[in-house]
Length: 179
Length: 351
Image (cartoon, rainbow over all chains, first blue to last red):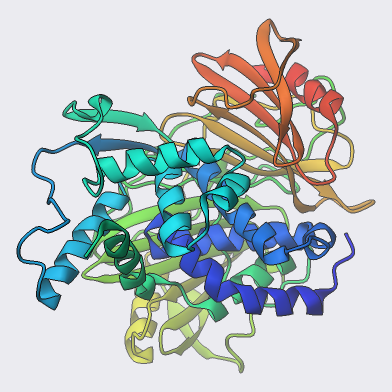
């Protein structure tokens, strides 16, 4: 593969901060985020003509990071979801008025985001952190907008940030999920 | 405050976890350089790995070229004077990681690693074992404890010249002896390297801990270097093995996770070369349901298959190929077509 090293280097330097922040939101963890982005950028190097020739190279690489994350999770991890009955009822809950409590609330939510299925978390990151419309999220994930809304709905419900009680499949004490 | 805003604030509130971009770029450049034979930086990536709770792995390089075995273990030493705990899994004599049942001869046979840390600082340890045909063994530890993280990378090679280069340190360093071996050390805030010369080769010990004073990290690196063990014989048992590797490719990586799933990465080689330029085909087992919506393919070794494309590359899934696990063969950019994937599937040694 013929690679314009200078162009790749410029692209990497420009995009790295954004990609690393995005990877942190996906993985929830610094080292995994770094490994994820590193793996993807090496692949970007291998595919540089294709990436640099894309209409929106930065979006192309975001897609690569997303799919690499989902692939990692599917291949390497088995996690346990512990559904609990004492989740904080965030909206309107008392005690979030001062900054310390708000921070504690956000930390708690961050922890619970880590317990979501990877695709659910990914949808929340893309919708609320990257501020992408559902149509773009669907295109990025290779699914329909209906599916995206389904992921978001289930995620918000699980987090008790939305609408209904826990879905039945999460009422068990422990649910083992392969991701 | 509504739920949307809480989520946005939660994400933004954790941006401080973002890794350093310069360090990441350095690792990317190093990885690219290492794979293309132009090593120019000292810090390698943590190879993409496998969580393998309760399993120890090691390997000796039995020969050759460019296979790498990667493994991550959570069963770490917890005391400051305890050696890393690794179970030994002997490999039946005569077995080989690779074969050539239906295709051209393959690259390397990786069964053991010999060098390991005998001392690591207290904390929870994850471990990666690997082998690289360009220089030899590598073993990477990450020790997390006390709110900090320490990286310990061991790289063993036949000679100093064969070690990956580094521009992190300049100058001759400091001569010393560790555990009776002639050694040389460099250190600066957050990073120290010790190269131990021993009979039969050298081992570089790179210790990284953010903001740790040079004198302290130098002392830590010397302690780790002094505790190195050169007698490990830990084996990795992949769930399945490859019997066919296409001409022009070699095995770039092998990984086994705690669920006993296995991943092999193939990489193309330059004309006449033996080192992989980059992984372009992944053959892995998974206990996840098949993900393709593609067409049913022809049977492979008696197992139902599905075929299709994912992310623009051909994919062949062999359903239930090993126990309940499906084997996925995924071509990479510029890689082989579906018939090539079938050849790999036909050549697999299952179970």
